[in-house]
Length: 256
Image (cartoon, rainbow, N blue to C red; front, side, top):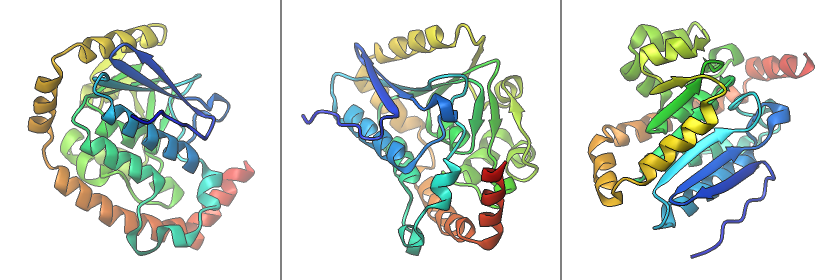
């Protein structure tokens, strides 16, 4: 079994017996994700998948926010060739790995939960959110389209009107709204989040692993349809990412 080698300097991995905790560790940038951070996340998920002694994965973020989405500077510096002919991004590489996992994935979120910060949660089995959590997809306001299968998953999960609050109106959901709509499983105080997340992660990790694997397989409906939707989203996302309209929005964002 190969050791886990992380290269970005912004992903931290901690093991708690059968629970593996992966922490976004770029608090000064509200844990905005770069391409190298996505590659580290993919490496961490692969490592978790291949370890028979690890039964549950917990994803969380350091500091006052879970994740401010994709780093805008990274978007601006992206090479058009890297997205040509529907080639998936490092972010979607992570999402595909989560879709394929037969082990449970949990997330603990607080504060800013933007873009991929929200859509990543759609591929987690249990999400805990602090009262401070705010869910905002951001795509429409940046001139982009949904990704990570969110254009398919969110209407089915939240209902069309609530999904369109995120995807068309560009609304921000509070933790209370997210709990009521079914986007999250648990809402706790900010002070309780870390302790409760670790407690739940260890509880899930202690369940019979073979039964857990079968349960995930039985409850994972529509995975093929989600993969196909990601393909469609990816083509349109790349088209928008390199459009003059979206580049101008990014430029104004960075000048603020």
